[in-house]
Image 1 (cartoon, rainbow, N blue to C red):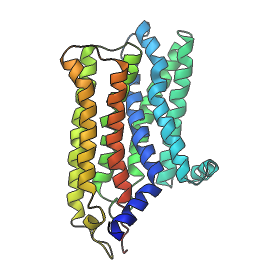
Image 2: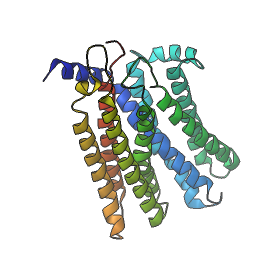
Image 3: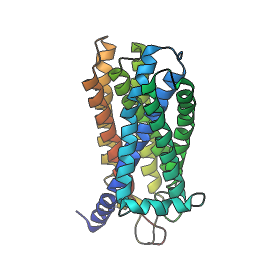
Image 4: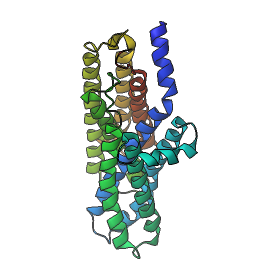
Length: 291
């Protein structure tokens, strides 16, 4: 293994906590948005939807896991307080605050869901706010990596890839919650799986275009493409894992067989694994201008 590849892998390992954050948080946010929209689109007296609200904790747990992992990048959790002082001027601070606001609103909506009809209107307002802050969170997460001094990150594919990653894994995570709550139709399940498959393909295309763009990027000492020669292999491994996840969920649906929670969980984990592979590769690709 060349010293350049070793340096890239070391950089990726150092940022592994952020790879976990951008993998689980992006997918969790998308899944929460899907469930919130589903609940809001149905009558407030729909018993199944009232029950489904309690399963918001499943995608919300993925977001919280990502937030916990991200604190490791700061050295210690207490340093998170210093991040908050940069709100409005720091992309990192804006990202953390947006995700924290989304998590707080969704958490409160989940807690109130156990009160059934008593806080019906409050939950509805909170779910609307959750959808809006979720969209904001995705945009802030993507924008946090627009760093001009890191030439391998300062290209449009950086933002597109992160959003597509969430859109690829989020539908399968939402399907886990829907199946656990015994909610949603066969048609909805098919739609979510198809959406996840389409986003996975678009993610692979975008990642491939990003690699092609590296051929024209040159740092002070290295060419960007030389730094990440293993990137094509990561893209192949990613699409293989995500494709396997889609197949696990799609095959029973196509054959009109019952799709159980264990199958949904397996499909979701495979999708997350595929996303993590390319997110890890992304953090290996840190080539600064002039070096």
